[in-house]
Length: 393
Ligand code: SAH
Ligand code: SF4
Image 1 (cartoon, protein in one colour):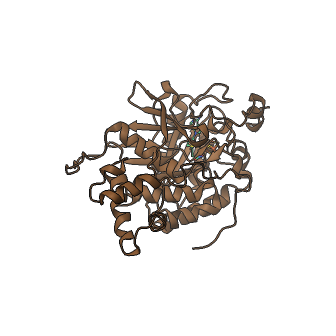
Image 2 (cartoon, helix red, strand yellow; image 1 turned 180 degrees about the vertical axis):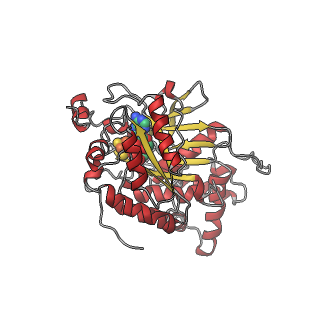
Image 3 (cartoon, helix red, strand yellow; image 1 turned 90 degrees about the vertical axis):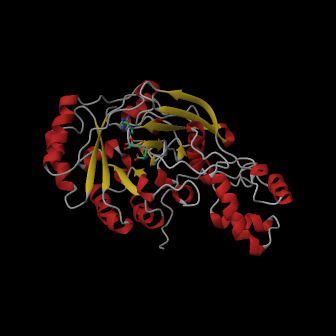
């Protein structure tokens, strides 16, 4: 494993453990859990087995009360209850869209808030989770980008979003009954909520390892998609240490336009990004990369853009997700007309790539891509700043 220098000097907001965080068993890796149990007096030779048992109660059965962990001795359960907690983010509000999309506003330590969205579809149920409160990046079309970074989420807060959604969906096996063998309500995870997951790499990795662990939530790495705006040095690490599918917020076909839309492009430009992407499928043993492309009227949606896009990604196994721009109050862009989006999709399709046009979900509750933003603020960027970043000021 290669060591990378820190790429985010601006992210100093790694949370200090607050009361409860250190003792919370949720979000700890198996190794960490092992050490915690030993420190609490568990004999070495039993620790591995206890980790497995507790792990199953928490992540397979969804139990939150040590007293219910009936395969552990009574006094051991009492000891656990005294020293540790099983804590999840608290749901502040839950909104349900006309189309069945559910948006949760969750409160985490420090009184901060994040949003999580559940999107039911015919053949799957996708949970869109957040990795940061706010975002350090300032993509000019993104509502989250108008909210300055407050802090990184901990692994407990990331995996906790999945557990809270499963609570709400009633998707834990009933105690004493064999788990139902049917399509899971929550079958897929996308790291496409608030924040840049690759600027919170370790926490995201630990949380996804827990989500993938076969003795617990047990989601396949092929059902997890991490979306990045293009943090190039962390892309190979994502393949090696997480191994999930990758989506990239591409959004433009020239550096000049991408610099304006996705400012991280000034650090790692299109050519550098494409090099990292070319290596990803092999490194992660996954089939293809998803290129996300937001359709902004008159900005990045011409036929010429479509043709350039196809040229740029030549040789990369890819799917191109066209996302009609989702508006938010004060947004400096408009959505491309439907006919334009279709013409763009057609050029890509004819070049041999899948080019689905994403239907906005949960727009009526501001749950669609790029609309998430919580009230937690350290400072709000002004409209003038937003327009400046968009090159419109
Ligand atoms: N920070 C990560 C993941 C979160 S954003 C990233 O940027 O990839 C998830 C996707 O929604 C990204 O492709 C993002 O560019 C897109 N998005 C942001 N704002 C949007 C908006 N207003 N309309 C449509 N898509 C948007
Ligand atoms: Fe951050 Fe992603 Fe929004 Fe850009 S698109 S501001 S990286 S959340």
